[in-house]
Image (cartoon, rainbow, N blue to C red):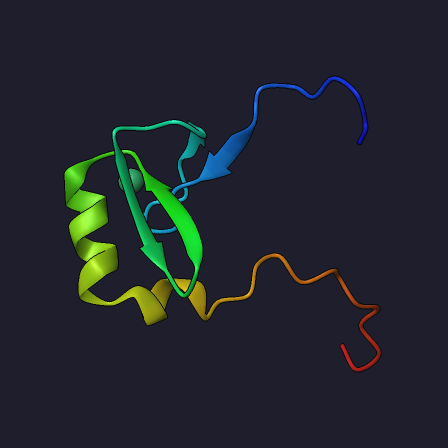
Length: 67
Ligand SMILES: [Zn+2]
C-alpha cells in the first residue's frame, strides 16, 4: 500500500544476519516464515525455534519508566 518498496530484508533469527527475503533456506514456524543464511542456521532454528522467536525484537520500543 506504500507503493514501491525497497527490496525486502529479513533477519536471520539465529545469527541476526540481514538477508534478502528470498533465500534458499527457510522454515515456517507458527505460521510465520523465517529465512536463514545457511542450512546450519536453519537447523539450529528447527532444533529450538522458541529460543529464537521468544525474544520479541519487533515489539515497539516502550518508554522506559524504570530504568
Ligand atoms: Zn544465519
